[in-house]
Amino acid sequence: MKKHVAITLLVLTTLGVLKAHVEIERQDGGVFLAYQGKKHDVLGVFLDQGNALLRQCRDVRQIDASSALAGLTLAAIQNFSPPDSQHARLLGLRQQDAWLLAELEFTTLNPAVVLLHSAQERVSVVEGAIWSGTTAPWASAPFIRRYIRERAPQAPRELMDCFDPAGVLFK
Image (cartoon, rainbow, N blue to C red; front, side, top):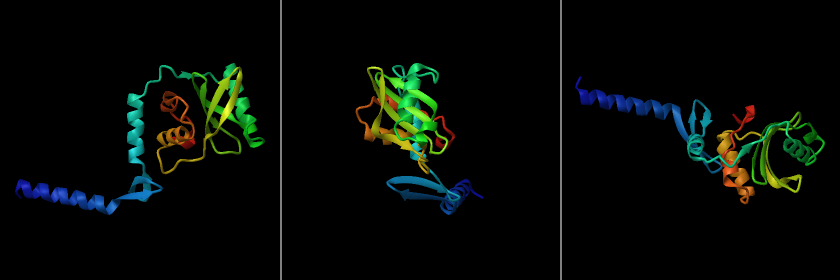
């Protein structure tokens, strides 16, 4: 068989297999690659990788869970929507200036990512800047970053860019 015929057959076979097993689906303004019935957020994964390469996190501090600031943050979240929020556990806490971004697990609630603001020894939840639950089929990190950024555009971009989920539901 001639080389150009073999290459043509290979390309046609590859395209046929892809067409039979891979689809592009649109859902809620997103585009997903569907393979064997499971949707994949290829654009979200690409954006997350680009974010990891380009972000500047030198002004964002990781806060220790045993610190006084972590205690104030946890108390603000626990008092935000009792009684279920009383069983919150911090998975991660980041700070930039007066802004905090907390990732939490709960006993009876879905995991959450919460934006908070601190002023004069007081920490408060930024109303509406809370993500809770799964992000499927979207890639979690870029989806949550965008969601909170849209609800609190005044928060520092670097703080949002430096968020990497730790919880199992967001992996």
